[in-house]
Image (cartoon, rainbow, N blue to C red):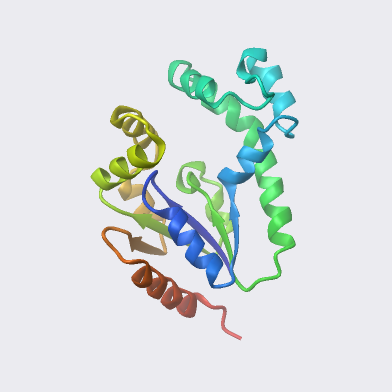
Length: 197
């Protein structure tokens, strides 16, 4: 069973993915793969430097994320150009890891699952994690030190709540919920979604 897990920034998606992992599922995190690809010597770096120039590389040879974020907000096509490099490499990595998984559930943790348009055909179920927008902003500001405006700018680029709900087979509402309750909901979903023999 291939599950696509998604949610807006600060929704608590990482907590839900850890719950799946604790239940024995293989979790494949597309953001984590993107970070690996953009480390010094990562498979994407030569292509990114060729596309954006050497100033996009930080002193240690990895992607200068702050510079890339600035470019994405100031140049209309910068994000698309970066995605054109990263998405095929991420896709190849996720499939390789899924093929090696050998577990009953494979959870693809994909923040932009709805936005990408191509993930729906790659998974059996889509699970969306949601909370109030004010909670999303508060969580991201607390954990990353971003300004409220920076978080709102990222949220504005992500799919709307309605778009995510339209793509969902199930929604977990992660607002003032204790971890034990989240785990209970995920176990119930696993029972419901478990492939019938």
